[in-house]
Image (cartoon, rainbow, N blue to C red; front, side, top):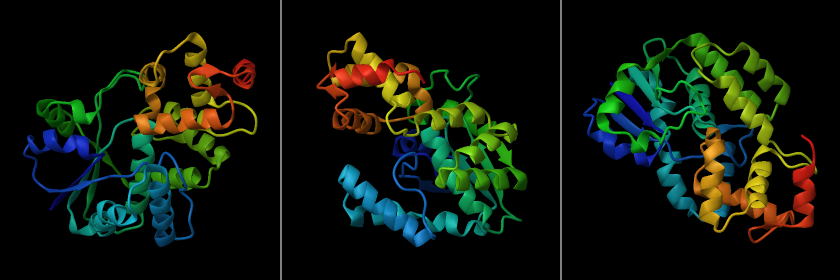
Length: 272
């Protein structure tokens, strides 16, 4: 048996047109934000359920059905001879994939091959519209060139997830220096992660970019989103994640509407 873990619902229609054999699991989480540290798996998913319900108004029973109840497919990976992870290079995808690899690493994989199906990019900053906007022939090409992950790769991935979940910046930097070549663009992606972490009074990378765009003049929130994505696609944010940051800027009194406040101008002028 073969399992394909897709990085979201948007990929499913064109994936079906590829007629690839195997079970399908759609990953419907965004571990790039919210609580990711817990004593055990039950606590982890209860925290995630509460966060998604509060942040995105998703009913808890819907989350339970769409996310938690689907985890059984990766909870017993030994029943599959091959598991293909369809994830892109941006931080949104990487956070999700490293969690999955961490989970898989805890299981017996002696008879299971783990593969990473990835887009063909020469740079993490190269524009890629996403698997969901890729035609079925391109998806087949990506599948044919999928990367096999060995035990050492999974061990590395598990360590990365533990460091990420613990918000251990020093450990993440160590991993950036020792990442296997299998994990293309790892250092760039996780440098971007470190640059987005909160500091007490200074704007992080994401906040600074939003403040810069607003300072240069923007007419609508949609325009602000597109201007942000032009330079910060490495995060893989959807509109909901960026809007959360915009709301945070308002709560900090750094913007009012689509204009900088004096406090926002001061935050933008601070040296990083």
